[in-house]
Structures are given as structure tokens and as C-alpha cells.
Image (spheres, rainbow, N blue to C red):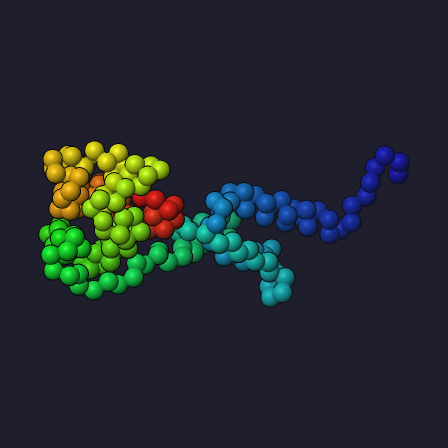
Length: 187
């Protein structure tokens, strides 16, 4: 038997199982941080012979192929802390009134408060000295807010109007912006 090797009776099925598993995993390889839970077994296997795979992450999807089903599990989105009613006449009260006027609920207000607490502490004159971002919504460049009014540098109504327009156009709602800020540390 020189130059040839012999195979045991179990080597081909084991090799085929690994190749099949690799094919399934390659077809559904999740992005880094994605959550999957799956049980993998060959026909006739059960109990302790079943293999499982778990990875963690942030998207939701179900994939099925050749009798195997894999479901990604989506972790809950970050929730903003509830804030209650703002002081009358404050920038937050103005924002609540504007949000309500746009058909948003208190959950969106909670997200907006958390977002702009992080960005500017609701300070109309807040300036990020390293980037130049300015105002309550931390507009960058600051002059973008001029599209909402000439008094953009000093008026909370103008800044909030511009900021809500930006959030709706880019993220759909304040909780979308908050989730992005939680993930990326900017919005």
C-alpha cells in the first residue's frame, strides 16, 4: 500500500458533516456581535449528539436550509429614562409641545431629553470647542440652523425646530436618534 492511505468507515461521514456545517455557517455568517442560536445534528442524531451554536449581536433574521433553521435574536433597543413633565417655559417644555404637535408620544420625548442632555444639557449656547457643534441639538456646522431662523444662535425655539427636523429626516424620530447615539456615541 505504498503511496495510498486507507480511510476508516467513519472518516467520510465525519468529514462530510464538518463540510456541511461549514457551508451552513458560511452562508449565514453573522456580522460581529450578531446573536444566533441553532442546534445542528446529522440525521438520526439526538440528545447529546446534537451540536449548538450561539453568537451575540443586534439584528433579527431567520434562515433555513436543508432542514436547518437558524434564528438571530435581536437584543432590546436601548430605552431612554422616563423624564416626566418639563418645567413650563423651559426649552424642554417647548420641545414637548413641538413633539406633541408632530404626533409623537412621551416615549419620544424621553429619548429626546436623553439625547440632548448628552449633547448640550439643553444649553442654547453650548459649544463643542473641538468640533464647532453648537446649541441644543449640537448642529455641525452651527450655521445649518439658520435654515430654521435668523436667530438660530440664541433662540431655543429655532434650535429645537431645526433639531427636530434633522432628527426626523435622518432617524425618523428621537428614539431612532437616541439608539444611534447609544451605539455610535454621536447622532
